[in-house]
Length: 251
Ligand code: PGA
Image 1 (spheres, rainbow, N blue to C red):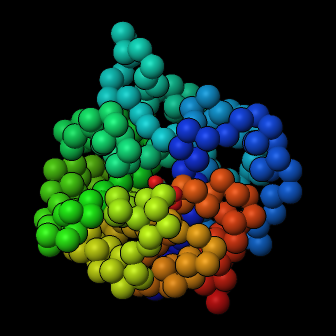
Image 2 (image 1 turned 135 degrees about the vertical axis):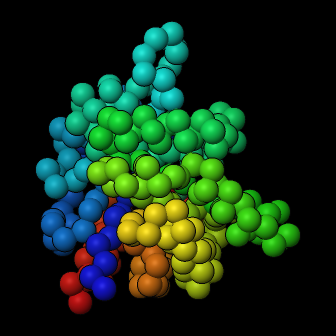
């Protein structure tokens, strides 16, 4: 199967004007068309990144409000993101689940808001180390996917991506082995098959992906890309990962 890769940078709360300027000053990945490169900076820099980044790069937000408008201090709505031609948004990252107490119900509403505004959601799921060690990984993932995605969403025209991010691998330098990640990705695809037969969803891996481990991860059958935190803050490292995806896709 010809597999298109999605290589997405999650800058989290990092970056500055001079960082963005430096980042794109010598930014030239191998090819510009065959896979999708997505950069998700903090909201305040969405426009700046759009201005500095080469045109083939898609820009994504790291969050979207569950409300349309009104007295919700600090929030940014789907309509506002859409006004600014933002094509993707991360939803349900484990840091938002943990520090902002977002639950599956909130995440579902955010997903619906993204779809209504033609923004492709990147739904993050993943288990904690305690859950993995007590054999709850598949139960946790099943619940996170099934309580959020439904057949109406999956049959909408908006593309939906899922990112499998084991919490114990995020920012820790620990990575799921390619086999471990592939097994969970296949499981996620099987849940999606049950919800909506016709839909193949790109499933990205996240959790300490970097230039040195990207190839073995991206070569796995069910891994369609990466959601990259720490390593995406180094432009050359991020380009390296994108180039690996290009090499795999183009042979
Ligand atoms: P990491 O973060 O690559 O630094 O582990 C990934 C993420 O949290 O999206």
